[in-house]
Amino acid sequence: GAVVSQHPSWVICKSGTSVKIECRSLDFQATTMFWYRQFPKQSLMLMATSNEGSKATYEQGVEKDKFLINHASLTLSTLTVTSAHPEDSSFYICSARTPMNTEAFFGQGTRLTVV
Amino acid sequence: GENVEQHPSTLSVQEGDSAVIKCTYSDSASNYFPWYKQELGKGPQLIIDIRSNVGEKKDQRIAVTLNKTAKHFSLHITETQPEDSAVYFCAASTSNTGNQFYFGTGTSLTVIP
Image (cartoon, rainbow over all chains, first blue to last red; front, side):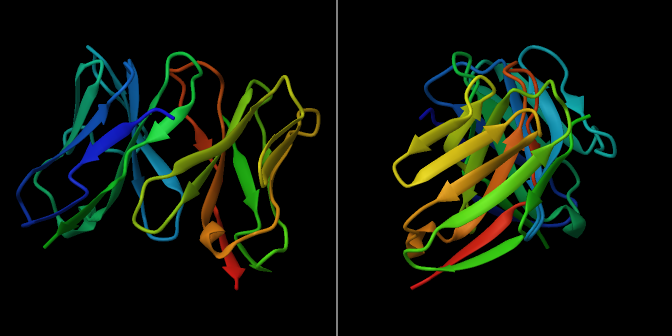
């Protein structure tokens, strides 16, 4: 299947700092990427839909000024958690759908811990 | 919007037995139904999918059935092995690449050796 690469796989940061997570589609172009947040033993919660060349669409309740999304190219989307706080600690996952078969592939996920 | 329900939330089976996970969806416009396996600390991995123009699809020990009239689909794993232990998520979407997936709540499968 197609490959979506997410980096870093884990990060620890101090409260008040910002963290950037990258999501790359390695072998296909993705006009749309999705960012999810997952709490322990729970399902994936869609945070936002990242659209190449335009603003992201955020789900209700997700602070767009805190979770900055940039989709600068057809193969790269970034999620920046600004002024992180301990409650932002979570597992963040990106995904992209292939243009041909519309299957969705997920990145490896990023475990963010804010101390 | 779409609402996907998944059952059971946990499932334990003996090695070699079969496991069945069921999902229902609400939006008749959904026409693509993938299943994902997620191991601890990793992203979901696509294991099988089905589109609305077929009723069943099989890939070795894994099969998925779809009843579009009743709006439910199921994952069947036969001859289960310990490495099948993971959390499984069903999802529903349309074929539009810009449309999101709606996920079930997950099933934690444990295969007992």
